[in-house]
Image: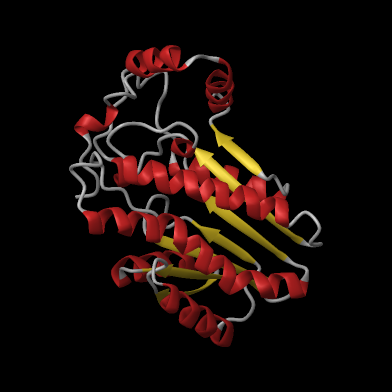
Length: 256
Protein backbone atom coordinates (compact mmCIF):
# COMPACT_ATOMS: atom_id res chain seq x y z
CA UNK A 1 0.00 0.00 0.00
CA UNK A 2 2.52 2.63 1.12
CA UNK A 3 4.91 4.04 -1.38
CA UNK A 4 3.07 2.59 -4.38
CA UNK A 5 1.33 4.58 -7.08
CA UNK A 6 -2.00 3.70 -5.51
CA UNK A 7 -4.77 6.02 -4.41
CA UNK A 8 -7.16 4.73 -1.78
CA UNK A 9 -10.58 6.39 -1.65
CA UNK A 10 -13.13 5.08 0.80
CA UNK A 11 -16.86 5.69 0.87
CA UNK A 12 -18.53 5.03 4.20
CA UNK A 13 -22.14 3.94 4.29
CA UNK A 14 -23.02 3.19 7.94
CA UNK A 15 -26.12 1.13 7.15
CA UNK A 16 -24.64 -0.93 4.32
CA UNK A 17 -21.04 -1.24 5.50
CA UNK A 18 -17.80 0.15 4.19
CA UNK A 19 -16.86 0.25 0.53
CA UNK A 20 -13.30 0.77 -0.67
CA UNK A 21 -12.27 2.13 -4.04
CA UNK A 22 -8.69 1.64 -5.25
CA UNK A 23 -7.01 3.69 -7.95
CA UNK A 24 -3.70 2.84 -9.55
CA UNK A 25 -1.83 2.38 -12.82
CA UNK A 26 -1.09 -1.36 -12.57
CA UNK A 27 -4.11 -3.62 -12.95
CA UNK A 28 -2.32 -6.71 -11.58
CA UNK A 29 -1.62 -4.93 -8.29
CA UNK A 30 -5.15 -3.56 -8.15
CA UNK A 31 -6.73 -6.96 -8.74
CA UNK A 32 -4.64 -8.65 -6.05
CA UNK A 33 -5.32 -5.94 -3.48
CA UNK A 34 -9.04 -5.88 -4.29
CA UNK A 35 -9.28 -9.65 -3.84
CA UNK A 36 -7.49 -9.47 -0.47
CA UNK A 37 -9.93 -6.82 0.74
CA UNK A 38 -12.97 -8.76 -0.48
CA UNK A 39 -11.75 -11.87 1.33
CA UNK A 40 -11.90 -9.84 4.55
CA UNK A 41 -15.59 -9.25 3.94
CA UNK A 42 -15.41 -5.68 2.67
CA UNK A 43 -16.83 -4.55 -0.64
CA UNK A 44 -14.07 -3.25 -2.90
CA UNK A 45 -13.81 -1.81 -6.40
CA UNK A 46 -10.84 -0.72 -8.47
CA UNK A 47 -10.29 1.68 -11.35
CA UNK A 48 -7.16 2.06 -13.48
CA UNK A 49 -6.11 5.68 -13.19
CA UNK A 50 -2.92 7.73 -13.30
CA UNK A 51 -3.46 10.44 -10.69
CA UNK A 52 -0.88 12.61 -12.45
CA UNK A 53 -3.23 12.86 -15.43
CA UNK A 54 -5.80 15.55 -14.66
CA UNK A 55 -8.41 14.58 -17.25
CA UNK A 56 -8.11 10.92 -16.33
CA UNK A 57 -8.72 11.74 -12.67
CA UNK A 58 -11.85 13.73 -13.44
CA UNK A 59 -13.20 10.98 -15.73
CA UNK A 60 -12.57 8.24 -13.16
CA UNK A 61 -14.07 10.35 -10.37
CA UNK A 62 -17.28 10.57 -12.40
CA UNK A 63 -17.19 6.81 -12.97
CA UNK A 64 -16.74 6.19 -9.23
CA UNK A 65 -19.73 8.35 -8.33
CA UNK A 66 -21.88 6.53 -10.88
CA UNK A 67 -20.81 3.01 -9.86
CA UNK A 68 -20.10 3.32 -6.12
CA UNK A 69 -21.50 6.59 -4.81
CA UNK A 70 -20.13 9.53 -2.86
CA UNK A 71 -16.58 9.43 -1.56
CA UNK A 72 -16.30 10.58 2.05
CA UNK A 73 -12.70 9.62 2.82
CA UNK A 74 -9.98 10.31 0.27
CA UNK A 75 -6.47 8.99 0.94
CA UNK A 76 -3.74 10.30 -1.34
CA UNK A 77 -0.65 8.11 -1.14
CA UNK A 78 0.46 7.81 -4.76
CA UNK A 79 4.17 8.55 -5.09
CA UNK A 80 7.28 7.78 -7.14
CA UNK A 81 10.97 8.37 -6.45
CA UNK A 82 13.88 8.14 -8.88
CA UNK A 83 16.72 8.38 -6.37
CA UNK A 84 19.10 10.53 -8.39
CA UNK A 85 20.75 13.92 -8.12
CA UNK A 86 19.38 16.84 -10.12
CA UNK A 87 22.05 16.65 -12.84
CA UNK A 88 21.66 12.87 -13.19
CA UNK A 89 17.87 13.03 -13.45
CA UNK A 90 16.01 12.83 -16.72
CA UNK A 91 13.72 15.83 -17.28
CA UNK A 92 10.68 13.64 -17.91
CA UNK A 93 11.37 11.70 -14.71
CA UNK A 94 11.49 14.95 -12.73
CA UNK A 95 8.17 16.05 -14.21
CA UNK A 96 6.64 12.66 -13.46
CA UNK A 97 7.48 12.99 -9.76
CA UNK A 98 5.84 16.39 -9.52
CA UNK A 99 2.76 15.35 -11.49
CA UNK A 100 2.11 12.22 -9.41
CA UNK A 101 3.38 13.22 -5.96
CA UNK A 102 2.04 16.78 -5.87
CA UNK A 103 -0.30 17.77 -8.68
CA UNK A 104 -2.17 14.48 -8.40
CA UNK A 105 -3.43 15.65 -5.02
CA UNK A 106 -4.74 18.85 -6.58
CA UNK A 107 -6.79 16.87 -9.09
CA UNK A 108 -8.15 14.20 -6.73
CA UNK A 109 -9.09 16.77 -4.10
CA UNK A 110 -10.81 18.99 -6.65
CA UNK A 111 -12.68 15.94 -7.92
CA UNK A 112 -14.08 14.79 -4.57
CA UNK A 113 -13.99 17.71 -2.11
CA UNK A 114 -16.97 19.67 -3.53
CA UNK A 115 -19.38 16.82 -2.78
CA UNK A 116 -17.91 16.39 0.72
CA UNK A 117 -18.61 20.06 1.38
CA UNK A 118 -22.21 19.64 0.15
CA UNK A 119 -22.73 16.63 2.41
CA UNK A 120 -20.80 18.26 5.28
CA UNK A 121 -19.09 14.91 5.65
CA UNK A 122 -15.59 14.13 4.47
CA UNK A 123 -11.91 13.70 5.22
CA UNK A 124 -8.84 14.28 3.03
CA UNK A 125 -5.75 12.27 4.01
CA UNK A 126 -2.25 12.76 2.64
CA UNK A 127 0.41 10.08 3.16
CA UNK A 128 3.45 12.33 2.91
CA UNK A 129 6.98 11.88 4.25
CA UNK A 130 9.26 13.39 6.85
CA UNK A 131 11.46 14.30 3.87
CA UNK A 132 8.96 17.08 3.24
CA UNK A 133 10.49 18.82 6.25
CA UNK A 134 14.07 17.56 6.09
CA UNK A 135 15.42 16.88 2.61
CA UNK A 136 18.31 14.55 1.77
CA UNK A 137 20.69 14.37 -1.21
CA UNK A 138 19.91 11.84 -3.92
CA UNK A 139 16.14 12.23 -3.81
CA UNK A 140 15.73 15.80 -4.96
CA UNK A 141 12.61 15.07 -7.03
CA UNK A 142 10.89 13.27 -4.16
CA UNK A 143 11.83 15.79 -1.46
CA UNK A 144 10.68 18.72 -3.59
CA UNK A 145 7.36 17.10 -4.42
CA UNK A 146 6.71 16.13 -0.81
CA UNK A 147 7.52 19.63 0.45
CA UNK A 148 5.04 21.00 -2.08
CA UNK A 149 2.43 18.45 -1.04
CA UNK A 150 2.94 19.42 2.60
CA UNK A 151 2.31 23.10 1.79
CA UNK A 152 -0.75 22.08 -0.21
CA UNK A 153 -2.20 20.14 2.73
CA UNK A 154 -1.31 22.85 5.24
CA UNK A 155 -3.18 25.43 3.18
CA UNK A 156 -6.09 23.06 2.55
CA UNK A 157 -6.41 22.14 6.23
CA UNK A 158 -6.57 25.77 7.30
CA UNK A 159 -9.09 26.47 4.56
CA UNK A 160 -11.39 23.77 5.93
CA UNK A 161 -11.53 25.20 9.46
CA UNK A 162 -14.90 26.85 8.80
CA UNK A 163 -16.29 23.92 6.81
CA UNK A 164 -18.43 21.77 9.13
CA UNK A 165 -17.96 18.02 8.87
CA UNK A 166 -14.93 18.11 6.58
CA UNK A 167 -11.36 17.72 7.87
CA UNK A 168 -7.86 16.87 6.68
CA UNK A 169 -4.93 14.84 8.00
CA UNK A 170 -1.30 14.91 6.88
CA UNK A 171 0.92 11.96 7.84
CA UNK A 172 4.70 12.40 7.81
CA UNK A 173 6.35 9.02 8.41
CA UNK A 174 10.04 8.24 8.62
CA UNK A 175 11.47 5.64 6.22
CA UNK A 176 8.93 2.81 5.85
CA UNK A 177 10.00 -0.75 5.02
CA UNK A 178 8.61 -1.06 1.50
CA UNK A 179 10.27 -1.58 -1.86
CA UNK A 180 9.99 2.10 -2.68
CA UNK A 181 13.21 3.06 -0.88
CA UNK A 182 14.85 -0.34 -1.10
CA UNK A 183 18.59 -0.10 -0.57
CA UNK A 184 18.55 3.15 1.38
CA UNK A 185 20.83 2.85 4.42
CA UNK A 186 21.26 5.03 7.50
CA UNK A 187 24.29 4.80 9.74
CA UNK A 188 22.45 3.60 12.85
CA UNK A 189 19.60 1.32 11.69
CA UNK A 190 19.00 0.00 15.21
CA UNK A 191 18.53 3.53 16.52
CA UNK A 192 16.36 4.60 13.57
CA UNK A 193 14.66 1.42 12.31
CA UNK A 194 12.29 1.67 9.34
CA UNK A 195 8.60 1.80 10.17
CA UNK A 196 6.35 -1.15 9.42
CA UNK A 197 3.62 -0.37 6.85
CA UNK A 198 1.05 -1.85 9.24
CA UNK A 199 2.08 0.62 11.93
CA UNK A 200 1.78 3.58 9.58
CA UNK A 201 -1.64 2.37 8.42
CA UNK A 202 -2.95 1.85 11.96
CA UNK A 203 -1.70 5.20 13.22
CA UNK A 204 -3.16 6.92 10.15
CA UNK A 205 -6.61 5.45 10.83
CA UNK A 206 -6.37 6.56 14.46
CA UNK A 207 -5.39 10.09 13.39
CA UNK A 208 -8.40 10.29 11.06
CA UNK A 209 -10.72 9.08 13.81
CA UNK A 210 -9.38 11.81 16.09
CA UNK A 211 -9.48 14.50 13.37
CA UNK A 212 -5.76 14.99 13.94
CA UNK A 213 -4.39 17.48 11.43
CA UNK A 214 -0.72 16.40 11.56
CA UNK A 215 0.92 13.10 12.45
CA UNK A 216 4.70 12.63 12.63
CA UNK A 217 6.00 9.05 12.85
CA UNK A 218 7.77 8.10 15.02
CA UNK A 219 7.41 10.70 17.76
CA UNK A 220 11.17 11.35 17.68
CA UNK A 221 10.66 13.23 14.40
CA UNK A 222 9.32 16.10 16.52
CA UNK A 223 12.88 16.48 17.84
CA UNK A 224 14.09 16.89 14.26
CA UNK A 225 11.67 19.75 13.70
CA UNK A 226 12.80 21.49 16.89
CA UNK A 227 16.47 21.12 15.98
CA UNK A 228 15.88 22.54 12.51
CA UNK A 229 14.28 25.61 14.02
CA UNK A 230 17.03 26.40 16.52
CA UNK A 231 20.36 25.08 15.20
CA UNK A 232 22.54 26.86 12.64
CA UNK A 233 22.94 25.29 9.20
CA UNK A 234 26.52 24.18 9.92
CA UNK A 235 25.34 22.15 12.93
CA UNK A 236 22.53 20.54 10.92
CA UNK A 237 25.01 19.55 8.23
CA UNK A 238 27.18 17.79 10.81
CA UNK A 239 24.15 15.92 12.14
CA UNK A 240 23.36 14.76 8.60
CA UNK A 241 26.92 13.53 8.16
CA UNK A 242 27.02 11.79 11.53
CA UNK A 243 23.65 10.06 11.14
CA UNK A 244 24.37 8.94 7.61
CA UNK A 245 21.40 10.69 6.01
CA UNK A 246 23.88 12.66 3.91
CA UNK A 247 24.88 9.49 2.05
CA UNK A 248 21.90 7.19 2.71
CA UNK A 249 20.78 7.27 -0.96
CA UNK A 250 24.17 6.10 -2.25
CA UNK A 251 22.99 2.48 -1.97
CA UNK A 252 19.46 3.17 -3.21
CA UNK A 253 17.98 0.56 -5.56
CA UNK A 254 14.25 1.20 -5.44
CA UNK A 255 11.68 -1.23 -6.74
CA UNK A 256 12.99 -4.22 -8.67
